[in-house]
Image (tube, rainbow, N blue to C red; front, side, top):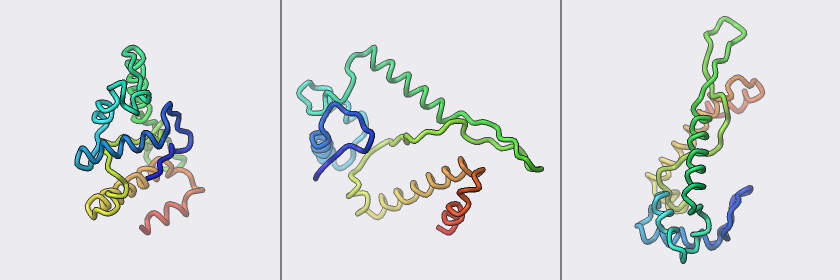
Length: 151
């Protein structure tokens, strides 16, 4: 397989090296990888993905605080006062595009497996409807919302 980082990704390691290492790990772990598995794999100085992690505990603690701040930003809502007689509603106060995943499987395997594929479609639809709720006040997206309703 050929790997490359998604646009905008900053990494100190080559995408092909990382992808090959993660695929090897996935195979050793019977098809599923959890983030803790990746960290354990990277812990050794000899691991090809070692340099993709911060091993200085003080810096890592700061990175954890950044993650906690992201959590706060993703979960705070703001009240929107409608202009008509409707009740006020709450929507996300800030936008975030970093979903959290408890486990990772190969996209190829997920698409081949009917149950995983169904979970992926359900997740995509849930994200689409969540997105709709966040941006429901934008009349410019009404056509997109109608198309989503048809699905």
